[in-house]
Image: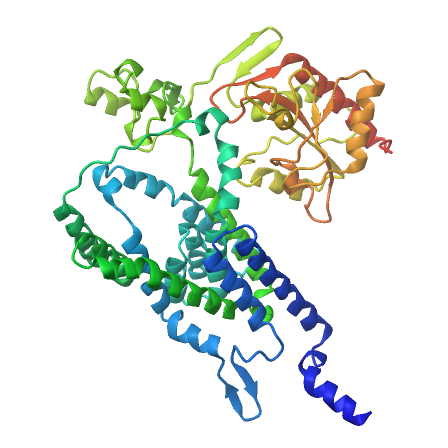
Length: 570
């Protein structure tokens, strides 16, 4: 028996020595590694990157794994992957070698033919700056989580570029380097999953069907050769620290364009790039050890990295909705967003949105002096306000959330027998900041959020996307992306509609979010429900709502307020 126990201990001692928490962490990391391998093989998602990362995650999370450094009685036993990390990633060597291959793959011809495309690249960095701001805000809530250097290192994930993430993280010496590397390369591989739903969310089906034909223009060989050299020199003069990254990328492109090193160019594009990608992927896994990877900081970085990718895709107001819109500068000077008239457009220009850099605002000034006397750089511009009522509907801009404000005002006119706070909050669309602050001060027993929500009964919308419709009464939410609403309040609101013949409808999807997201988690928590006026075309220059829906929202809200105040919500 003793011999058998010695055998078991010799064979499985490393596993048996684990405490329960470490064992669970190990299994979780195996599951994460297995998921990456599954996505690589079954879904064919960046297999050259995800497969070695997944296998490496399993490799480094085996008990006393010899692939990574281990401390023993006689000293440190050097692991192969740990040594590769020190030799190739911590000093940026592998990413730089990979950049040679990437540079050899890139054809800068379209950019050289149309330099204005640089503006699109600049707009794509929007997510980086948004994430930097968000990371700094997170540090205000959780002091000490992110320094400004950590925030910058996390934000660069939005560049969708693993080598750049490694470069910036090493430069600032962030303690989150491992999580940043994993997030950057994981999201690069998951672009086919992340971007399509985001693009569908901010574009119409008609816009996605637009075909934009491309006609290649002849670029001289001299220009193609000079381009990587000039870019390297300019980058070196402006930002010397970037020379290694930019220089290796441009060197790879010079191999491609010089015309006398075709075999080296092909080697860089294929053999070198593939080999470095495989080694890089499995080496990155050294930063996926359970003890350092399974932490709140890592989770926050993964969320912030996803945020950066999404906002890089969205990138601000879409140019397609701007041209021809009436606007107002500083609330006093009317104008029109203008571009080349449609009858002067070439056939191919009519099939695509006008780029932002080709738009301007015409205020009717007859001279530069007259224009500068009326407006200045930095003035605020908004869509021109208007209001129209016809056929039982109202049309105006910003009905989300002017409709909710109107309901609040009408309720304030009524005589109430219970204490009620009416809050008109700000910045719902960029963080629900006003509502969160108000809820913290008021400490409500319960909250009813009033807003406008997307009515999907419009031309071209799929039936399953019609989460509510005009004329169906206020939409009552059971959950959304930020809140699981009070089940009691949700059911009682719909029951009150039936009992008092007030048309209302459950919102049939959990998309979006509103001020309830910050209210319901205030202090010890607040029971919350949302009643929303269905609005077509929200977040555009003009929206539409039903007068009957607005009136029924007022009626249902008044009934629900009385029920909640009287404790009759069961």
